[in-house]
Length: 396
Image (cartoon, rainbow, N blue to C red; front, top):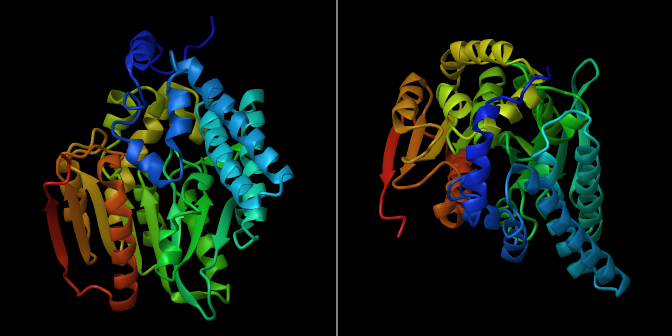
């Protein structure tokens, strides 16, 4: 008898909710604003949403819209409209990224096909934008590589740099909107990585464990410190969702980052995300860790949680956590335990009425985070700093 997918008994419920929903809120409540901030366009999102009737319809719906955008990019380029072509290639890459992500199966032919589309379209976009964003690899163990994009800010001299750590439902191509680059607007370089368990690492069978994301992140910091465009004393980490956990692991392992931000909190015990939330989270992280047996995965998660607060207590960098008080994956009581464990200078911005993806406030949130990063890299925070703010009146 074949082994069922994790939490397969809930598939019929999941499919019915997806069929009834006009958007992605069943998967990620309130994510629309975040998608738009990252460069997705409403016309593409709406075209995909109209075609979703259940779990299995999601990847082909995204792939179809990716093909539409790639064809428009090719037509624009043939007509000599490079700027328009770059925009369409970016939209195609984003859609191919969603298509491949929701096939959490190593070596699946459609996953490989859709991921090739990500790389093909994103490379064309980078080329058409002048090649300022460059792609690199860093080795963090024998035969183990992490994959990064580095995009220096315009102008001479070394500058502050933000290393962005995507979440478990993101890839590095999602993380920077080339047409609204908050880092460059503030004179900061930006770097984004696929670490173990993410994007290009998965395609190369580089799976996540309890410690290797920290090692991979430290090697990316090595890369940045060797670049003439980077001020090595002004490096920040910005992690989203599961990236809010990985940033802490990196900075607890490597003291060079001077500011760390986690947004879309994932800093509490894992029982909610893997056993109570919608089933895709568990399925995807089992794939990311290459642990396909549910009992073995449960043991892996128990160990992950057992060591977590001890890792957090080692963090020395200036720290900001940005979360919603309606977060369905990391409730405020878990955030409080985490914040009380920290010994570093720290801040908490807790947004009232906001869910995990924080799309409700994304347009205000990301500029404010980048302002905090730049100010903190330049001025630091005083020893003993512990500021916690409930941000009210944000959701109408």
